[in-house]
Length: 141
Image (cartoon, rainbow, N blue to C red; front, side):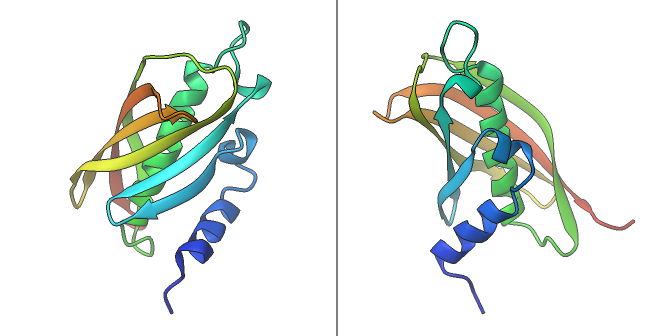
C-alpha cells in the first residue's frame, strides 16, 4: 500500500524527532518526482549574534533536505545515505519568517548523487545556493 503525499510527509517528519532537524524545527513540506522541499523558521534560535539567519543553520537545512531527498530515491532496505560534501553561497540576509529549501537532483547515480538546493524566503527571494553530494552505501558488507 502506497502512502498518500500527506501520510508520507507526516511519516518523514515523525522520523526526524530527537534529531538536529527537530532542534532547528526543520519540516518537510512538499515533494515530487524530482524534488523535496523543507522549511525552517528564522528566529533567535538560528540567528547570528547580530540578529540574522546563521549560515551554519542554512547549511544544516540544505544538508538535511538534500540527504533526505537522496534517501527518498534509494532502496532503504539495502542502502543508507551519507553526505560527502556541501557548499553554500549566501546571497541575502533574513531576520524572520521562514526559509524554504528545495532540493533537486543534478545527478542521480547508483552510488553518488549531486543535488542543487536553493534556499528562499517567504517572498521567494533567493537567500542561498547550496550543492550537496551524497553517497549510497550498502547496509551490510
